[in-house]
Image 1: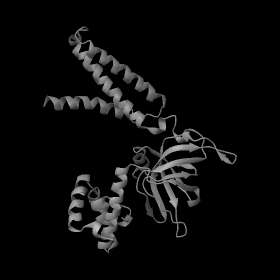
Image 2: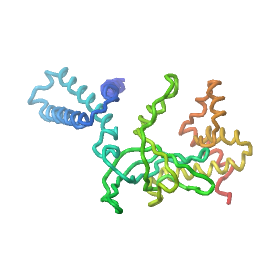
Image 3: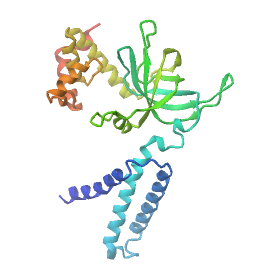
Length: 292
């Protein structure tokens, strides 16, 4: 019981530090908070190393306050350090002509628009007809690419691309009661988006992502294809893929609206453990790898 209370008492100041500095947008705060965090940490190390010589047991209350302050600052530092737009290498703080990006999720095609999230790794500035030396860049983008029957683009997780396009900030909701899509993306470190045409990008390399994530996405893709063969009805296939695999690319807006109005949309939010159990059962009943 005491161990559980200690964990809670340690967690509260850490979480409070995150909450207080969640909306911080001053870059210098990152290093200031980091410096204060380091000073308090070293101070606590010294107290612990010379606990008896300093008679620190006589000042347990003050030592406890120092620990709480350190945890508060550590939470604040973790929060501000995670915000890429506060970094000096954030792509939008410097001039660039091209960006090197890496696809970090599964691209989804809807209504002729291919959408995915991407990590920015480098930026290039064009000088005359040549590209300058690449500069290190950080940031995330929401990428949309216009496709058609003549310009089919096949992209996958882990592909590295060189793009040329003007990025814009994510627009805020127009209606006060509307879902705040910008804040939802900001929680994922995405503050800008870019709309591209096929000629504005080129593939540099493939399979450059995390191999575990790539394996999971490939496995899910095989399962989706398997369900497509088994379920002929489009709506049934879309709901089954969403409920079992969390794959929403084929889920229509009309179906989403029905689930929302009936108060059952939470059923479309799947649990990772449940997905694993259902996958094992279905894979045992209907072996995927026996298909050609």
